[in-house]
Image (cartoon, rainbow, N blue to C red; front, side):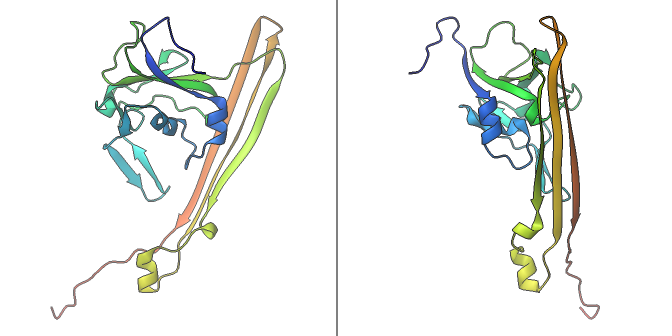
Length: 206
């Protein structure tokens, strides 16, 4: 059954490490999972990057919480504010595999959470333990598995090429057994792409 929270009136959604590992994301951006929570809608302040083939939010975590602007979302990393004050985006992005879990708090959050008119997204990273543990990974997207665009097909233009490799590792373990632990994560992204672009040009006789 569902456990009832009798300590606070907070309404929140927890995204755990199993969901982070199993649910698909296009660019392995952990903030994509904010959409799993209620009272969340797509933000409208976004820009598209044709080079990387992705849509990038220019405010908050890319989603509007409780109908507020994306900039009304407070972003925390291990409980510490993680917002670029000038750009109002996540100040430090961490690899998805380095995250233990995160919560999306949408209503009635306590006094320990401030600076949020919409909601709070709090990311908790993995910690080291007495045992050495870690993982290595690589994800890739290739144009070989995609179809040509409709416009290219109509004009007889061949499909463009695209290759994205996202790879990294994380490792954790003890420095002093039962006393001091460390966890380290690193990720790399390589994108190579080429595409044809068409333009309509007026005939000089016109």
